[in-house]
Image 1 (cartoon, one colour):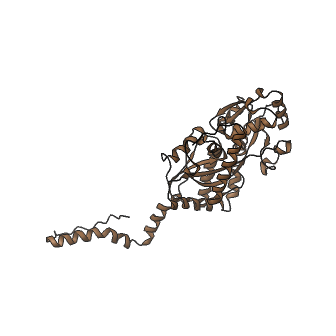
Image 2: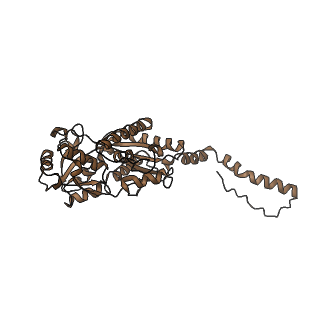
Image 3: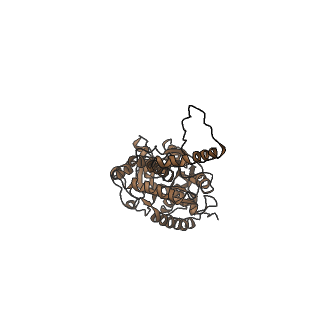
Amino acid sequence: MHLDVRLPMPKQPLSIDRPSRRRVLRDWALLPWVGSWVAGPGLAQAQSAAAVDPSLLAADCVIPARAGGGFALTCALARDALQAVRPQRPPLGQRYLPGGIGAVAFDRVASGQLGGSHTLVAFSSGSLLNLAQGRFGPHAPTAVHWLVTLGTDYGVVAVHRDAPWKTLQELLAALRHDVSRVVFGAGGTVGSQDWVKTALLVRAAVRDHKAMRFVAFEGGGEALEALQGKHVQVCCGDAAEVHQRIRGGAPIRLLAVFAPQRLPGDWAAVPTAREQGVELVWPTVRGLYLSANVSAEVAQAWTRAFQEAVTAPGYARLQARHGLFPLELTGKPLQNHVENQLQSFRQLADELGLRRWAR
């Protein structure tokens, strides 16, 4: 730390011999250090804390897709949760970086083009699915630091309110009759999370998932917009992002939720796929990562900040307001979850005949 110390100029010029001048210059050079000591430990500690704890300073949350999807919801929840427990800190900013449903953002963070201690990036189970297939470039899962999960979401089957299908079984009957006559919208291309959920649904109708028709979009938000406009007929999206649309008046009907049992609150009236004879459960974990190049102190500071946020008394209400359900992980439990998900997704990719790109 350097303090700008200015001494008052004397009214009369000083006559300094050469040895004395050297002593004065030496003493002046020491004054900044003396000034920092005189200022006391409070200022030094405050500046040191701010340098080590970036969660106290301005930071951005990168949304690696277009507006309206689950990544935007994740960053909004992170912003609100941090603000609730640290109201003095600047609100967490939001930046969009679409491309490959997270692939562009992951590659830039992993390669050092994006990141640092003030940049967080949203991820989901869909990110891990793409990573398991090698779709995020030549990077290992350890190329980023998995920071926190803020909760879990669940897959859903959504249709337009004017669609002819009122139940999941009616949709399955239509798929059995002619799978090519149903057009699905998916947030992502072949192998993406929405595509995989759709493929599993088509397989539940005892039809070849490779025969299904689908239109790929850059994120769940775009897919739901297409559903609202009747450009596609079915979307296997996620509960939270669909719930936001319905609350906003979107003409969407839900046929099923891919949860182990019925969800509470506004979801209580929506039957699970299991209830309708389809053994399909798909949780979508939502969280944040940051660059693996940050120091251990910085990573620990962010971890502490989010541990404080997700254990705060009001977090459950905040989480529910954003349409998510409890699943808060940090540290080693989160690393274990990531590793287990990657292993399961690699097996699933093989079952569906998806190409796994070598890293």
